[in-house]
Length: 157
Image 1: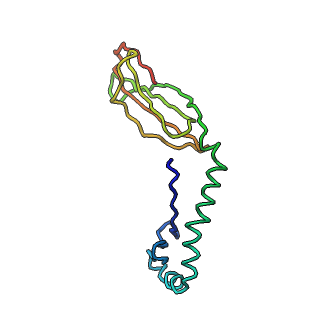
Image 2: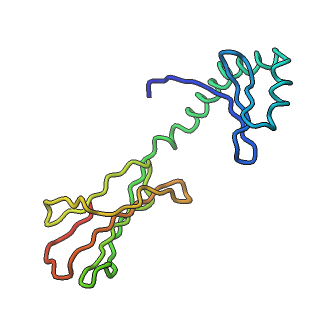
């Protein structure tokens, strides 16, 4: 938001950290034992370190800014959630679980609350948090359990 930029170079191999580049010193540092040969080769050739440092401080930042500009429309889009409420038997004998599900929203930020009788917010709801959908939107469920004899009105907001 404040337009601050920074770049780093970090490698992984088969899901494990391999090595990283220290911009201040201009050196490659091996993290994995298998990366020690690369560390020696890269650090012998100071021109490699100078090239990577220059790339990270200039070209990488320029490309980052271009990609943000190209994706600005997508990054700033807002998609309202589709919301459904459903019930199922509760964990207790005379209870029902009410679940509110919001899906297809973007960006990730959402506030979901159960409200009783239009006033009281239900703080004892269970949620698994905000989860991603395959289409790069998000979903969230919030469930409360109430007694079958409860005559209050419940709303998902």
